[in-house]
Length: 189
Image (spheres, rainbow, N blue to C red):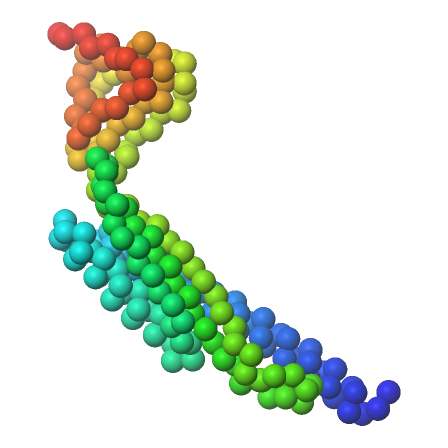
């Protein structure tokens, strides 16, 4: 086997390994950027959607540009949709990297083939769902005697379609909202 062929094969193997590592690091940066934007959306003190979106955009962009080797190819911060449970958005970040791979040049490949990676994160700001029961046939929540359920600012949801999806036989329960697919029974003491 000629020496150039062996050198090309070794160069191609090294180039492939370097491109694979670059792609992995690029995906990690894109993931961090999207998650950082979602975290900023959740942690911003203002209840105004436009303020939360601006904070998400600033954080996602800052994290995307943190590594000077990567270029922010595309970023989309979705419009906020709202319902009774909060504000929802979707953050998409796409980063691009143009590797300078000298081994690829030796192997006869392109040294500037861009590598792109995309990450998506969803965020919901609002009232958290603190208790979710999934039994569809039996009471999902039962408080009795001196039992106490304290979930201030949270939503309690029972997926049970039973006539008594929630049973309150004494005790106390405190939450932002109680939601039941079925009915409930409350015995006042």
